[in-house]
Image (cartoon, rainbow, N blue to C red; front, side, top):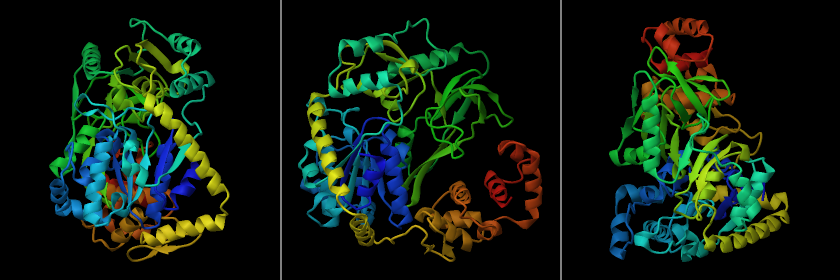
Length: 555
């Protein structure tokens, strides 16, 4: 199934299981769906099975969202107690569409506990209390942790999965790997049909520990190996250690979840010459999560200057990781979006794309671990294999059997929707939007913003809300307070609107005192690059970064 076909099905409001091989575009498809929901005035509840995955999608873990926490089981009294918590009940009552990422890592017991709480809160004896549920993930990747040494119970083994009547959308296009030989190896692992030729293809990429490429990240199965290598390589470098400390805002428990999921450490230690990896996507497209580079120095503010492998020089300024709920930022952490890239665990690499990696699978201890590690790399030429054990190329036998069912169900769904005409599909989509309390947006149709002024064509709901508030706000601080965001997030929304061609000077010019505009524009004009740090410095810190960014939008 193509991404476009899957998106069409998602928009009908069906409960969907979106799956596919690594690099098939699951994240892109779900992001398109989320954008469409928000443009229609429907705010989805975005969750994930793990903290790392939750951080990637700007949501929270399903455990936190549903209030079940780390519980292994719930009695009826426990369900009632959780459902009685005001913040949990309010969150679940307001929810309309629940998205659960990395469903492969969510055990059946956790899946059922979240379902039980939703049913209790919403007083509806339907799966998840009648919510539209979208499950995203690939069961060939890392499985749930078995409780107390017991058997792994995948979410699809739960009666709740069956009762959801999910439409399976199995994406079959490939956007990460374009190496035919490598794709053949990965497909063989996925089908449980690894032959000697596949093994030989991988072992042809075997390297000796004394001859490793210096700038490729190393993936290991255990944390101890990762910590030892990163610390050791940093120690070898001459020069002073520069430390960057993470800052945070929001409730401690929510911040703690963001910290655990953030790929940048709480205290980032760097030296000139350190090999690093970016841990977040650049809004300007300068780097993505997984871009490799080397620290070439530190700027006048002490921030790292990184030269990426393609020769781009980036001044790595702090960025925010946020936890949003119903369009409001509940917690955030800020850190320089880097981590040492000498080594990382396979678990933390899930979701990344790498041009090259040194991979050690000699201590692989879990089904799917080798497949996840190998599929991070785009081409066989980028693989440098230190070793692999007998488990490294194995996938869970239950998944091998279940995958055939998923593929068949996806083919049937594609065929059924192919037989439906465009008018019938659109009717289903309109019905879904109306049921969710949203507003249908046709191409070329203009909607009104939630506040004063016309909403321009195609503007996402979250940006429309910010724009409406900004238009009426006395200043940036007041706009941020009313929106429930930090000022930098409000400015970021305005920058997004500008890129979309949906922002006018009159919308926000009143946020900047007129007597400082010329001074800041002069400093911006004098700086040939788009870096803000030199401008901030040239103005001797008289104006905040947010104010400078606002004036830049006025140019």
